[in-house]
Image (cartoon, rainbow, N blue to C red; front, top):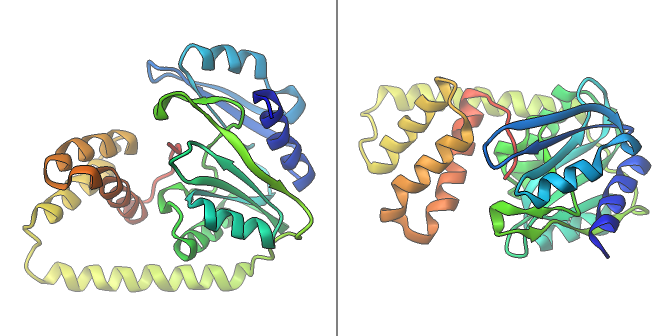
Length: 261
């Protein structure tokens, strides 16, 4: 498919899944975010976004905030796991780079409010080892048919846009109870850990440093970038994975939304 066909395939799947309005965001190389909010899928300024993308901007999209939508988003899912999900349920798989994972937009049997999507996405992310930092309920994903300049300008493509397997049925009450129990257990563990001797290892110091940055309101992307730089001499090629997971755990602790990479 051509680039525009990938875009239309993604938006077409959204429309069939029940998403009618979207927020489009463009992040320029300067870091400035330009928003077009709460537009119908047909009204998205795609020509403008393509012109921005040619000049090095990143292009993101999400179901518009303020509505209940029957989809949930998962980031950094391995291609085999993503394909497995699409074999069982209605799902849109967007591959953000050849070497990277997939964005999965999973169709649900009922429309979910933003906070409920956050709970459901966090619950699912733990079970399929998706990125736990991308479960805010309003997270941006990349729009297919545009270049991912963070990954050298590779194209963001629709890997699969499947309908026919049926939507996934979230057991919302059960999931929310499970999440509350997990948070209570984590808080108890942190209280016990706090009564023990502080972790003075390099990883322990970095954990405290990242938590402090996020609690102070620093951008998670900045925290990630600084941690990669700090950890690379020690961890080598594993630095990016280590930084991503450390920031993700810290975000879960302090509570924070974000923009996917």
